[in-house]
Image (cartoon, rainbow, N blue to C red; front, side, top):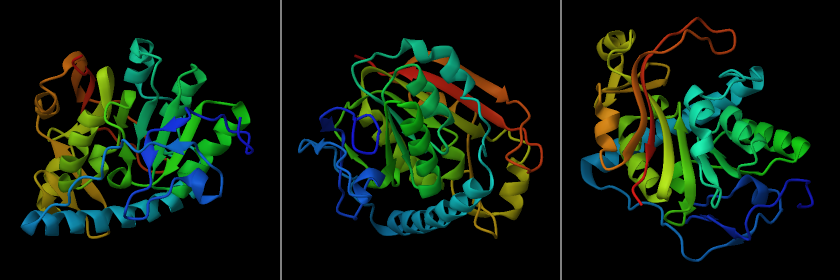
Length: 281
Protein backbone atom coordinates (compact mmCIF):
# COMPACT_ATOMS: atom_id res chain seq x y z
CA UNK A 1 0.00 0.00 0.00
CA UNK A 2 1.50 3.38 -0.90
CA UNK A 3 1.37 6.58 1.16
CA UNK A 4 -1.85 7.68 -0.60
CA UNK A 5 -3.62 4.47 0.38
CA UNK A 6 -3.65 3.15 -3.21
CA UNK A 7 -2.52 -0.42 -3.53
CA UNK A 8 0.82 -0.66 -5.33
CA UNK A 9 1.10 -2.67 -8.50
CA UNK A 10 4.04 -4.84 -9.56
CA UNK A 11 7.51 -3.61 -8.73
CA UNK A 12 8.08 -3.52 -12.50
CA UNK A 13 5.78 -0.99 -14.08
CA UNK A 14 4.80 -1.55 -17.73
CA UNK A 15 4.87 2.22 -18.28
CA UNK A 16 7.62 4.68 -18.95
CA UNK A 17 8.08 8.42 -19.34
CA UNK A 18 8.00 9.32 -23.03
CA UNK A 19 10.16 11.89 -24.81
CA UNK A 20 7.03 14.01 -25.32
CA UNK A 21 6.83 14.72 -21.61
CA UNK A 22 4.20 12.17 -20.59
CA UNK A 23 3.81 11.80 -16.83
CA UNK A 24 1.45 9.44 -15.13
CA UNK A 25 -0.90 11.02 -12.64
CA UNK A 26 0.63 9.43 -9.57
CA UNK A 27 4.14 10.60 -10.43
CA UNK A 28 2.79 14.08 -11.22
CA UNK A 29 1.93 14.39 -7.55
CA UNK A 30 5.28 13.17 -6.36
CA UNK A 31 4.27 9.60 -5.54
CA UNK A 32 6.45 6.85 -6.91
CA UNK A 33 4.34 4.43 -8.88
CA UNK A 34 6.95 1.69 -9.11
CA UNK A 35 10.31 1.20 -10.79
CA UNK A 36 10.15 1.84 -14.53
CA UNK A 37 11.41 -0.96 -16.74
CA UNK A 38 14.16 -0.31 -19.29
CA UNK A 39 12.82 -2.91 -21.73
CA UNK A 40 9.86 -0.95 -23.02
CA UNK A 41 7.75 -0.50 -26.10
CA UNK A 42 8.76 2.78 -27.70
CA UNK A 43 6.33 5.49 -28.72
CA UNK A 44 5.45 4.69 -32.36
CA UNK A 45 7.58 6.25 -35.08
CA UNK A 46 5.92 9.44 -36.20
CA UNK A 47 4.37 9.41 -39.67
CA UNK A 48 5.66 11.50 -42.57
CA UNK A 49 4.28 13.50 -45.48
CA UNK A 50 0.55 13.92 -45.96
CA UNK A 51 -0.18 11.25 -43.39
CA UNK A 52 1.88 13.23 -40.88
CA UNK A 53 -0.18 16.34 -41.58
CA UNK A 54 -3.45 14.42 -41.18
CA UNK A 55 -2.23 12.84 -37.96
CA UNK A 56 -1.12 16.20 -36.56
CA UNK A 57 -4.58 17.63 -37.21
CA UNK A 58 -6.14 14.53 -35.64
CA UNK A 59 -4.02 14.92 -32.51
CA UNK A 60 -4.92 18.59 -32.21
CA UNK A 61 -8.60 17.69 -32.48
CA UNK A 62 -8.22 15.00 -29.85
CA UNK A 63 -6.49 17.35 -27.41
CA UNK A 64 -9.42 19.75 -27.68
CA UNK A 65 -11.82 16.87 -27.06
CA UNK A 66 -9.83 15.94 -23.94
CA UNK A 67 -10.61 19.35 -22.49
CA UNK A 68 -14.28 18.97 -23.45
CA UNK A 69 -14.44 15.68 -21.55
CA UNK A 70 -12.98 17.32 -18.46
CA UNK A 71 -15.95 19.69 -18.51
CA UNK A 72 -18.46 16.91 -19.19
CA UNK A 73 -17.08 14.65 -16.46
CA UNK A 74 -17.18 17.55 -14.02
CA UNK A 75 -20.87 18.13 -14.78
CA UNK A 76 -21.93 14.46 -14.81
CA UNK A 77 -20.72 11.84 -12.34
CA UNK A 78 -21.55 8.84 -14.54
CA UNK A 79 -21.51 10.24 -18.05
CA UNK A 80 -21.54 6.80 -19.68
CA UNK A 81 -23.64 5.18 -16.99
CA UNK A 82 -22.69 3.08 -13.96
CA UNK A 83 -22.70 -0.34 -15.62
CA UNK A 84 -19.71 -2.06 -17.25
CA UNK A 85 -19.77 -3.13 -20.90
CA UNK A 86 -21.96 -6.21 -21.32
CA UNK A 87 -19.21 -8.23 -23.04
CA UNK A 88 -16.93 -7.58 -20.08
CA UNK A 89 -19.54 -8.91 -17.68
CA UNK A 90 -20.00 -11.98 -19.85
CA UNK A 91 -16.35 -12.87 -20.50
CA UNK A 92 -14.19 -11.38 -17.74
CA UNK A 93 -13.77 -14.80 -16.14
CA UNK A 94 -11.65 -15.92 -19.12
CA UNK A 95 -8.82 -13.59 -18.10
CA UNK A 96 -5.55 -14.98 -16.90
CA UNK A 97 -4.33 -13.53 -13.61
CA UNK A 98 -0.57 -13.19 -14.20
CA UNK A 99 -0.50 -9.73 -15.77
CA UNK A 100 -2.69 -6.65 -15.39
CA UNK A 101 -5.43 -5.51 -17.74
CA UNK A 102 -5.05 -2.21 -19.61
CA UNK A 103 -8.15 -0.03 -20.00
CA UNK A 104 -7.43 2.46 -22.81
CA UNK A 105 -9.71 5.46 -22.46
CA UNK A 106 -11.06 4.34 -19.09
CA UNK A 107 -13.24 7.42 -18.57
CA UNK A 108 -14.78 7.46 -15.11
CA UNK A 109 -13.87 3.82 -14.59
CA UNK A 110 -17.03 1.81 -15.11
CA UNK A 111 -15.06 -1.06 -16.71
CA UNK A 112 -11.76 -0.75 -14.85
CA UNK A 113 -13.44 -0.66 -11.45
CA UNK A 114 -15.67 -3.60 -12.34
CA UNK A 115 -12.61 -5.77 -13.00
CA UNK A 116 -10.76 -4.47 -9.96
CA UNK A 117 -13.69 -5.43 -7.75
CA UNK A 118 -13.24 -8.96 -9.11
CA UNK A 119 -9.66 -8.90 -7.84
CA UNK A 120 -8.06 -8.24 -11.25
CA UNK A 121 -5.23 -5.73 -11.43
CA UNK A 122 -5.99 -2.89 -13.84
CA UNK A 123 -3.98 -0.08 -15.40
CA UNK A 124 -6.49 2.64 -16.26
CA UNK A 125 -5.40 5.19 -18.89
CA UNK A 126 -7.26 8.38 -19.83
CA UNK A 127 -6.25 11.90 -20.92
CA UNK A 128 -8.91 13.53 -18.73
CA UNK A 129 -7.56 14.48 -15.33
CA UNK A 130 -11.10 14.75 -14.00
CA UNK A 131 -11.81 11.16 -15.05
CA UNK A 132 -8.52 9.83 -13.72
CA UNK A 133 -9.05 11.57 -10.41
CA UNK A 134 -12.48 9.97 -10.08
CA UNK A 135 -11.11 6.48 -10.73
CA UNK A 136 -8.19 7.07 -8.39
CA UNK A 137 -10.40 8.23 -5.54
CA UNK A 138 -12.72 5.23 -5.86
CA UNK A 139 -9.80 2.81 -6.03
CA UNK A 140 -8.25 4.35 -2.92
CA UNK A 141 -11.53 4.36 -1.02
CA UNK A 142 -12.28 0.71 -1.83
CA UNK A 143 -8.64 -0.46 -1.72
CA UNK A 144 -8.81 -1.72 -5.31
CA UNK A 145 -5.83 -2.87 -7.42
CA UNK A 146 -6.02 -0.01 -9.95
CA UNK A 147 -3.13 2.06 -11.23
CA UNK A 148 -4.26 5.27 -12.92
CA UNK A 149 -2.32 6.93 -15.72
CA UNK A 150 -3.26 10.37 -17.04
CA UNK A 151 -2.21 10.65 -20.68
CA UNK A 152 -2.98 9.67 -24.26
CA UNK A 153 -2.22 6.24 -25.66
CA UNK A 154 0.34 7.64 -28.12
CA UNK A 155 2.45 8.78 -25.18
CA UNK A 156 2.21 5.48 -23.37
CA UNK A 157 5.26 3.26 -23.39
CA UNK A 158 4.78 -0.32 -22.29
CA UNK A 159 6.65 -3.57 -22.59
CA UNK A 160 5.41 -5.75 -25.43
CA UNK A 161 3.02 -8.44 -24.19
CA UNK A 162 2.50 -6.58 -20.89
CA UNK A 163 -1.21 -7.25 -20.46
CA UNK A 164 -3.46 -10.28 -20.15
CA UNK A 165 -6.32 -8.10 -21.35
CA UNK A 166 -6.74 -4.83 -23.21
CA UNK A 167 -10.00 -2.86 -23.20
CA UNK A 168 -10.80 -0.44 -26.03
CA UNK A 169 -14.44 0.18 -25.21
CA UNK A 170 -16.13 3.26 -26.63
CA UNK A 171 -12.87 4.95 -27.63
CA UNK A 172 -12.63 4.29 -31.38
CA UNK A 173 -15.72 6.35 -32.37
CA UNK A 174 -14.16 9.43 -30.70
CA UNK A 175 -10.79 9.14 -32.48
CA UNK A 176 -10.06 10.51 -35.98
CA UNK A 177 -9.25 7.63 -38.32
CA UNK A 178 -5.49 8.40 -38.45
CA UNK A 179 -5.32 7.84 -34.69
CA UNK A 180 -7.38 4.64 -34.92
CA UNK A 181 -4.79 3.39 -37.40
CA UNK A 182 -2.04 4.14 -34.87
CA UNK A 183 -3.88 2.61 -31.92
CA UNK A 184 -4.66 -0.83 -33.31
CA UNK A 185 -1.03 -1.96 -33.89
CA UNK A 186 -0.24 -0.91 -30.32
CA UNK A 187 -3.13 -3.00 -29.05
CA UNK A 188 -1.63 -5.99 -30.86
CA UNK A 189 1.77 -5.33 -29.30
CA UNK A 190 0.56 -4.76 -25.75
CA UNK A 191 -1.47 -7.99 -25.63
CA UNK A 192 0.26 -11.01 -24.12
CA UNK A 193 0.07 -14.38 -25.87
CA UNK A 194 -3.40 -15.84 -25.20
CA UNK A 195 -4.42 -12.40 -23.92
CA UNK A 196 -7.94 -11.11 -24.43
CA UNK A 197 -8.98 -7.96 -26.24
CA UNK A 198 -12.34 -6.20 -25.82
CA UNK A 199 -13.47 -3.67 -28.44
CA UNK A 200 -16.59 -1.74 -29.37
CA UNK A 201 -16.94 0.44 -32.47
CA UNK A 202 -19.67 2.16 -34.45
CA UNK A 203 -20.37 0.90 -37.96
CA UNK A 204 -21.49 2.64 -41.14
CA UNK A 205 -24.97 1.20 -40.57
CA UNK A 206 -25.37 3.76 -37.77
CA UNK A 207 -28.47 6.00 -38.12
CA UNK A 208 -26.22 9.10 -37.91
CA UNK A 209 -23.68 8.00 -40.51
CA UNK A 210 -25.26 9.58 -43.60
CA UNK A 211 -25.84 12.88 -41.84
CA UNK A 212 -22.25 13.04 -40.64
CA UNK A 213 -20.90 12.01 -44.05
CA UNK A 214 -22.96 14.76 -45.71
CA UNK A 215 -22.62 17.67 -43.31
CA UNK A 216 -19.38 17.14 -41.35
CA UNK A 217 -15.80 17.51 -42.57
CA UNK A 218 -13.95 14.27 -43.50
CA UNK A 219 -10.88 13.59 -41.34
CA UNK A 220 -10.14 10.10 -42.66
CA UNK A 221 -11.94 7.10 -44.08
CA UNK A 222 -15.49 7.05 -42.65
CA UNK A 223 -14.32 9.63 -40.12
CA UNK A 224 -15.89 13.08 -39.75
CA UNK A 225 -15.61 16.23 -37.65
CA UNK A 226 -18.41 18.63 -36.78
CA UNK A 227 -18.00 22.43 -36.91
CA UNK A 228 -17.78 22.31 -33.09
CA UNK A 229 -14.90 19.81 -33.21
CA UNK A 230 -16.71 16.60 -32.31
CA UNK A 231 -15.36 13.55 -34.11
CA UNK A 232 -17.21 10.42 -35.13
CA UNK A 233 -15.43 7.49 -36.79
CA UNK A 234 -17.18 4.45 -38.23
CA UNK A 235 -15.94 1.06 -39.41
CA UNK A 236 -17.42 -0.88 -42.29
CA UNK A 237 -19.49 -3.98 -41.47
CA UNK A 238 -17.13 -6.82 -40.51
CA UNK A 239 -14.12 -4.48 -40.71
CA UNK A 240 -13.33 -4.89 -37.03
CA UNK A 241 -13.20 -8.64 -37.40
CA UNK A 242 -10.93 -8.40 -40.43
CA UNK A 243 -8.53 -6.08 -38.59
CA UNK A 244 -7.97 -8.82 -36.03
CA UNK A 245 -8.12 -11.78 -38.39
CA UNK A 246 -5.08 -13.37 -36.74
CA UNK A 247 -6.88 -13.48 -33.38
CA UNK A 248 -9.28 -16.17 -32.17
CA UNK A 249 -12.86 -14.92 -32.06
CA UNK A 250 -14.32 -15.46 -28.60
CA UNK A 251 -17.33 -13.28 -29.32
CA UNK A 252 -18.42 -11.12 -32.25
CA UNK A 253 -21.68 -9.28 -32.83
CA UNK A 254 -22.92 -6.46 -35.05
CA UNK A 255 -26.28 -4.72 -34.87
CA UNK A 256 -28.18 -1.90 -33.20
CA UNK A 257 -27.09 -1.38 -29.62
CA UNK A 258 -29.40 -0.49 -26.73
CA UNK A 259 -30.96 2.92 -26.34
CA UNK A 260 -29.09 5.12 -23.88
CA UNK A 261 -28.30 8.71 -23.00
CA UNK A 262 -25.22 10.50 -21.69
CA UNK A 263 -26.07 12.59 -18.67
CA UNK A 264 -28.99 14.81 -19.59
CA UNK A 265 -28.43 14.45 -23.33
CA UNK A 266 -30.86 13.03 -25.89
CA UNK A 267 -31.62 9.34 -26.27
CA UNK A 268 -29.13 7.66 -28.62
CA UNK A 269 -28.90 4.33 -30.36
CA UNK A 270 -25.94 3.24 -32.46
CA UNK A 271 -25.12 0.56 -34.99
CA UNK A 272 -22.10 -1.10 -33.49
CA UNK A 273 -19.74 -4.01 -33.53
CA UNK A 274 -18.58 -5.58 -30.28
CA UNK A 275 -15.82 -8.13 -30.09
CA UNK A 276 -13.78 -10.21 -27.72
CA UNK A 277 -10.64 -11.60 -29.36
CA UNK A 278 -7.89 -13.87 -28.01
CA UNK A 279 -4.33 -13.36 -29.20
CA UNK A 280 -2.58 -16.52 -30.47
CA UNK A 281 -0.12 -18.12 -28.07
